[in-house]
Image 1 (cartoon, rainbow, N blue to C red):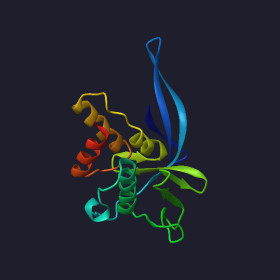
Image 2 (image 1 turned 90 degrees about the vertical axis):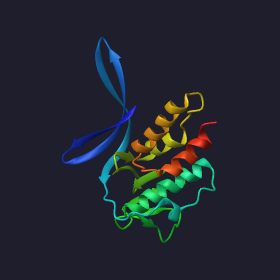
Image 3 (image 1 turned 90 degrees about the horizontal axis):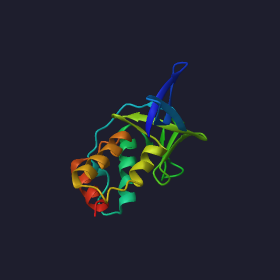
Length: 167
């Protein structure tokens, strides 16, 4: 499955799509709507080491990477709910506890770096199982889920995460 972007009346929307083959023809089936796509510009470049420490479990590190990415793209901590991050005067909210990005009650997809950050791509990082694969294949799969989510993970953080999930 992969994220596909469709333009409708000048706006971009993200869908989770699955390919299948039928009589030598490719078919795409939409599995889930992932929300309107918002392109955000990187506004600051902060080293991850200044933002978070690597003393947590895997899920907490992924949460910190999400926060770090949102921070670099202009999100700020919500003054009322310090665990959430807001953008554009609160029109878009990123929640590193639930790994959701929303606008009101609607899911949102952020186009950052080479990927699309949304609930699906973030949870794909959390749920990856690479334990029964060769090391280079496992590393490639782990890197791919971060790229798909738009997270530019620092090399040393990637190595640390890989060692935690590849046992």
